[in-house]
Length: 437
Image (cartoon, rainbow, N blue to C red):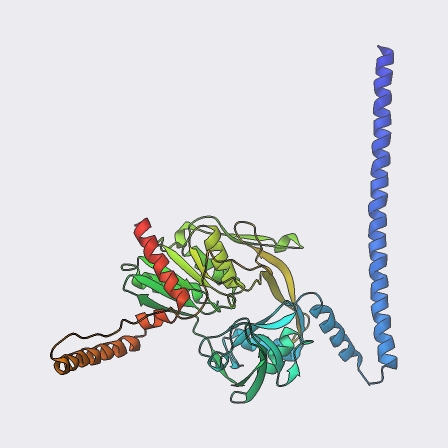
């Protein structure tokens, strides 16, 4: 028995010794890693300051230390990803002007896709939209200057300017054999973010052009105004470049009463967030169709992707842009800042938006609906009299059509026939209303 106790105590002693040895080794390894990391950090900073000093001393041009630091910061930020950058005093001021909702420029949102400066979407009714720029156009030159080495903010800075001044954009477009030159005159850019129209009295069409601070409020107002007669809703997010995250979340919350809407994950624990739906804000459960295309980005992709994952809406159109990262603007002085990507968005199913976008449930090309008008034939004996009667009918019909087209709160059959994606959305809503009651 004594031998057994002795052996047991021996094993315990050995175990404690090994545990202490392992703890000491792990502590030593951790300490060594920290020291190595700190040493590596100091060496890197020393290398940076050494290069700055050499350039300042020997560069052929006379460059101040302030300019060298600015150039270094700009280069570092632009090489992190397409959406991070250093904001100089001028850039920071421009960003503040843009977030006020009215500014001088062309009226397009741009991003970098596959390494090229790409039009995410033209804003409706702006100079760029009227000049014919389209989502997916690659901007090759701005005023004959190549964009290949430009950052997004550099390009935006050039495109903005005094109202009434001209600018020339050279673009590359799918299915076009050669680059296209587009001449645009800058204007004041004001955005009507939300408007609503009726389709055949019982379908509510809601267009959201961007996500500013009143989007959810304005959409809710339109739903409430037409709730009594609405049997289905079409939410049009085509060519919507995004905007405020909280508005995207609040918009989805109008249509769903439970589940995760979107989550974001970053390097730091504090950047990880989950945004969920709540019952109290849900306004309607009528059938929904969401229209999307290559110009739908960021907040638009969160809304459409969440409604798709939560089985709340059918998505119609084309694949979205694929911008699913979170940027924050962090001031570094009173009038300078950096814009940094700190996290990525994830939809309720866990899938990411970044670089892949949101795929529609039903893919539909843009364009007009093919129509074939019935040929006019007569078998009347009194042809002249008949034609006079028919002309009267045509005149009356044309007048009715003119009156119908002047109404801003409805979508006419003529307008529907010019938009194949919208026509498909209407047909799907009608089918859903029938099957779901």
